Length: 259
Length: 72
Length: 73
Image 1 (cartoon, each protein chain N blue to C red):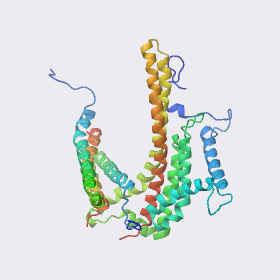
Image 2: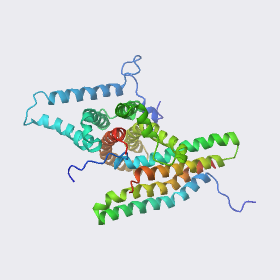
Image 3: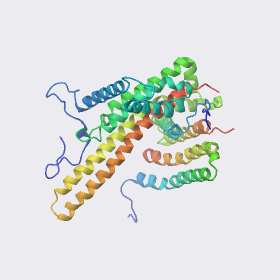
Image 4: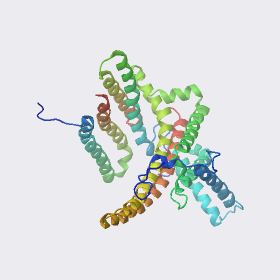
């Protein structure tokens, strides 16, 4: 239960506010607003790309041009740039990942939706696990399991310092990478939503004060909320881009040939 | 009899003091990189290894500061 | 520099490099600090083993960063 300030406003916001109730009373606890939003995001992406490629023409129509621009950005700017000529294989996955994360991030900013599924750690964890399995799988398929782990774990160093370095390499490649991928996306979305809640609800809480001086500070609080809203738009774009770029970077590292 | 006493978390104060040096150090390193790249943009690719090595060594001291706060 | 593909080295440049450096630093300290903590509990050295572990992890991490990201000729 949220702690209510005077006047019945749920201030300050806490982690409990992120545990939403089920959409169906008493049954299906997993069917919350977050689940519905993820389904909506998937449906929007599928429908948009199918509809944009309904009748592909050589001189693209406007909707085809938008879809091609998105795919071109992910393919040229990320896949080819980071992975090289083998990157075209990964361009569809990277485009989908980018669009999905961008859409779910932006859900936190659309009125009436106002929460991003990525502010629940579960969804970034799944995305990070997929990227993690991807770069290990790709590396094993290209180099063979033994050679891949040998390249990944044994740094170029004299033999007597290797016992010091191999645990660090293992930890930093196989544990830190997926954890930070998930945690970076989750923390940005969670903190952004939290800070918007603080300033918006804080404005209402300040409005419930007695003196007129404190009441007028609530306008400042809402002004900050508007400014931070624009920051959140930038953060949403940036976090989607960073996730995709890091995934591409890990795939490139797995595919790279040894000197 | 105590002539002077510090109450509260001495580790946090220690970390705060320990973070002054690395803070300035990291700023100097990146400032040097930016200036060098501004003077001669072609050198940016050559100097980037030194950027990361310098950052690592300076940041090591800051991380030691925060770690020792928990150890001792 | 059209057509200038990045050389097939394992070092991430750009976005990956900063995170790699931080990952090595924190990861090295965590791994060997944990080992140092275990040794400390075993030998009851009163914190010295943890400090040794932390510094060893830090040295290893800086060495790895110098090797991986310091692509000096």
